[in-house]
Amino acid sequence: MRQRRWLELLKDYDANIQYHPGKANVVADALSRKSGMVAGIKVEEEIIRDLERLTPSRDKIERVEKANERYKSAFSTFSENERQHLIQIKELQDENKLLKSKCVDCTKCQSVQVQVEELKSVNDSLTKMNQKLLNSRER
Image 1: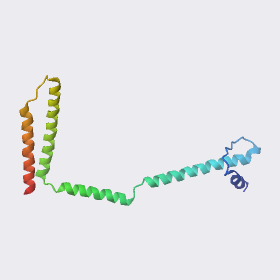
Image 2: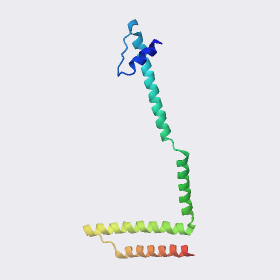
Image 3: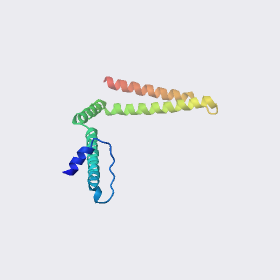
Image 4: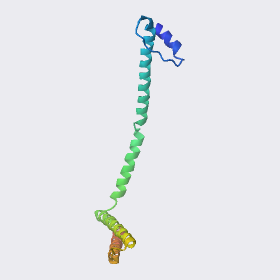
């Protein structure tokens, strides 16, 4: 009971109660232990609140799942041939970029010359692949 009264009196003040062993400091001993327990409880409550904020709600999970399904269904509209054409076009575009970068390097140092025919053939094959893809989509 005494501890409660002391705690009520001292809770409004910013005080640091230090423990000194002995019978004269029994109240200070009890209060210092009590404040440590209260501080631990407050920290636990804050951690619990933070964890509750971090857990995703069911609505968010459902929205992500629906978006994933829409993405999959949009990609599934392509046939296997169309997917292969898209992959080949991407590979050819990457190769084209690589050749163009080599060409830029050649103009800077003028030590190696890139043949224009290579660039033209890559460009032609890209155009053909694109036309095939468009024709297959129209059918």
